[in-house]
Length: 44
Image (cartoon, rainbow, N blue to C red; front, side):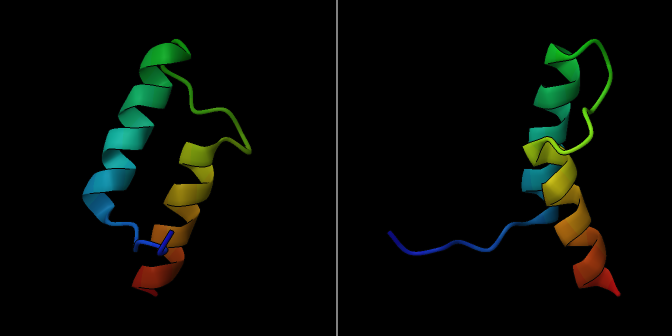
């Protein structure tokens, strides 16, 4: 299966779903947190 590049909109969608299911908190080390870190590093 080919790897796909993660986009800012995908990260937003993932983070929204994660925070919704975790009472408004993104757990440290979660996939959403890691995805956000990847996007932040890309922008630099």
